[in-house]
Image (tube, rainbow, N blue to C red; front, top):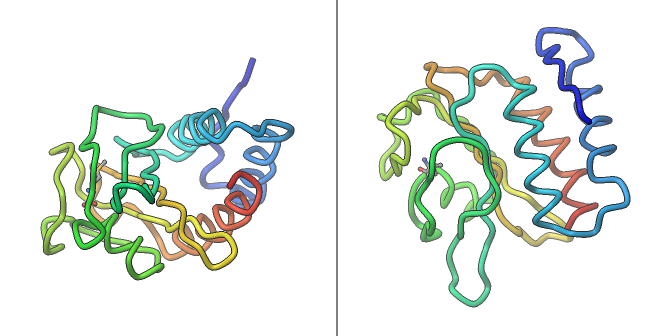
Length: 161
Ligand code: SME
């Protein structure tokens, strides 16, 4: 049984989060199982999210395909040149969007989403997919969220891909 206490405002929140995610995936080689548990953990540990999940790059289809997530059903396929997720995949850079309505080509899966943070998942200079966090609050994600989640997910990607 897992108990997730959101200590989001604690100074050591991200340090604890990384340890918790490490423990969650420890000893488990199955990618889908690990992504499912990570999306659940993040969704419950980070306040004010309405969607949290993964899009994985399909080498056969040359597009991002929906992976494990928490939240409402979402669009299944995203072309690399489309949306915030496609932009993160194509540029290899974290996308922190304060108001998705100002982002050209934003794909609205859930009309509640206002701000968005998308982190490319890299290992050995290869991008395997993205982590997408959506919030109903404008400018929900801080620079600290961006930097720390990027760092954590880079370390996690090294272990799960
Ligand atoms: N808004 C994303 C699409 C994915 S959903 O938000 C779950 C985008 O523009 O890429």
